[in-house]
Image 1: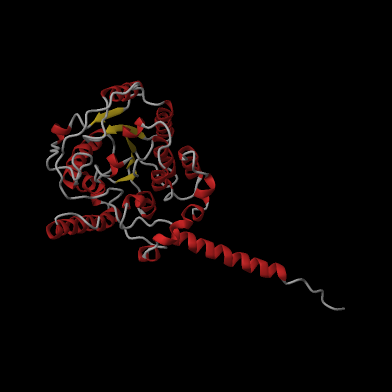
Image 2: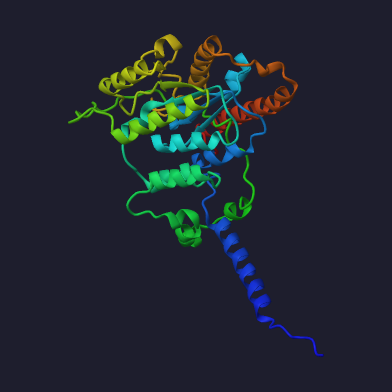
Length: 355
């Protein structure tokens, strides 16, 4: 009896499909923005997944957390282990889903949310959405972040298959796109974006008079979701408003947060009002004329806030823990090396050009 012959085309199709998928995967990795030398904030979210130890304090929020708080300084002063899951113009719903994502990996004792984002009640910008979402690992949390963040011109398919969105980047490709296809250098310090340069605060336009000062229901609903998520997981939830002269934080907005915190017995600190007590000097402690703190200002705020954390919550001093001590010795060295490199650039060029 002759052996029955099977057609060879299914195997050939399978091989062809595998090759096609591999090619598309490589093209997608090549074409996606790398954010290594330009708009480096686009790497903030992704860098979290490189962490090897847990953190007892997690920050979520926009530039007012990742530029104003230094986790390394809080570790050096108090032994606090913390991480900033921040991103540029991070909206309240993105903070919620990033927190949800974080809880897949660890359960902190304290979560800190910066309230400035509550001024936005609806999706704002695809570019900022991408910097908050593209770096997230795939999970239910990432899907939720996409669905809640998309503007009218965006669609889910472009997030699932980024090559559909970035295929036109061919003309923008540089050696950096090839160099960082599969691995990126570390840029941040537990989510903190360091800048050592100084640009004193200048005058700002008078605040716009609003027709309605009520914080939006959508944004406030995600604040409530964060509070409940923390409550369900036995996590303390703390609200802060970082010291910044602009954008303007209205007293009417502030009172709504005060009322919310009182209603749910939360701590809320408006550090704009405590800048003098902290020792913030807007002539020396900001690198962009009062919008964000530089390293000097961030370390002052971190010392002040770290003292509150250690006095209020049962946090562990990890400075003598052998595992953490080894990890943080490397982190501190990286921190000091970058600080020195930035000062060298300032002396040589009169400005920071590589960070």
